[in-house]
Image (cartoon, rainbow, N blue to C red; front, top):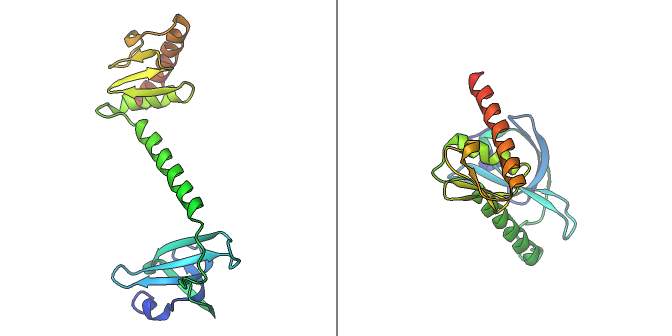
Amino acid sequence: MEATVGEELGVGYFFSFRTTLGEEFEGQIITYDRPTNIVIIQEGTSKPGGRRNVRFLKTTYIKDLTFLRRGDDPLDSKKCFLDLPSLQAREEAALRQAEAEAERIGVGVTGEAQSIFDALSKTLPVRWDKTAIVVMNEVRVSSPYHPENVIGGTPAANERVKKVLELERRRLQVRSAA
């Protein structure tokens, strides 16, 4: 299949695909990139403004394909509609999400410190301040992240952080012993 798939795939044609992983779907060929052996397939509705999925599929993963019909050029600029404001909003949301996820990763900390941060973040608002964990913007947990390294905040907040920290340390010890 790999050697001839490029010649078999015509832009605009609709095919039924079966992958080597057992997945089956139908779609229209948008383009085929010969150097990388990747075909770009558009799935979804043909209704204007309807949602579509676009797949980048390595042709070596195509186990079987069946020609369904010939279609119009999917890249015809007169028929393409892009909702740019919606796409820009999705991009901005994805960037904000990626930035938020990146801020949750400690720089220059051990895996154990990251596990403790992750455990605290499940129930409390936390952030990194260099290698210190700041909980509820008032309690600080410094390396080596033991209950005696908890400082600041109200007595109740301080005790809550110490309790979660003790439980997470026990869980990490059980995991490492197993």
